[in-house]
Length: 422
Image (cartoon, rainbow, N blue to C red; front, side, top):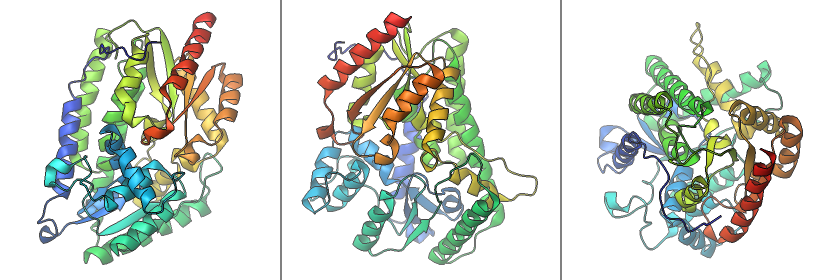
């Protein structure tokens, strides 16, 4: 494999610009110096935390993890990680956490978003919403941010889910967490939650998730109309602005363009599709297009991945309008909040449904929760679904933990194995 091939083999997705425009306006709004005068506040939220109640209460949710991805893509994350380490944080901590903390301590403006206000970084939060349904690191991370900024933090606790469907006592507990969250938000904002506003926000959220799910499922077609890098960039609104009407509009545009590709038989890459691979884990943000473009030049396409699938889960709005019950089910069923067996079953199913030839497992030093058990998963998925797998080691943000040469060596051997089996 020649990793230095520069020719772009991606088909440019025109609607991606609409996504970028929406996210630019989203971050610009958070930097508004008159925000508080307009009765709005800012919350930093973990990616698994409930966003709909915040949007319904005029609170702008900002995601340090999403900022970490942006910093990684801007190749500024490693510097910020080193800044956090200089302040006593371990290099073994999550790179998203170190990037976030480093951006707070950095004497120089972080590159991402510095063009908005000259300061870079995320807008300073008024409160923190921490959901532990993705990992345990976020709790200590957010506790430190709470101490640094001297602001309140709410822990949205969702115990690990061992079965496919949460039992009633589990749902009741998470509902109580959501009720406590609403009480917390009402206290911070000095006003009551309007149920009709929350209902509208929830419906917007569900419609956005439905559109996102439809977009993802078009990857089942051959050739696949989307590749991994496309989905990783398109996912930003469904993470941060699920309850905003703008997300529905922009995803309708994306769905229309991707469906057009399917109708015209156009693939995500401009060369013939030879190998269909499932990607497991968070991407290498600092090497995103270079990594996937080099593979695409060999006819490798990634029609599905586990990361963006995490936001395709939804709960139906019930006839009784029991919003809190629906939300408790949705936020409990987060991919990382479930068992290793669930991961094995999901990867096996997706690899078959999307007719993949194999699985690429990205083992990350930063995210232990996501990477834990990958050798077992690879073995079990191969036995269950007949799909071979390869593990490469890296990181989503910290470039010090990624060796290109080692990755390409493993991937070359993996592609040769798949070619021999075809």
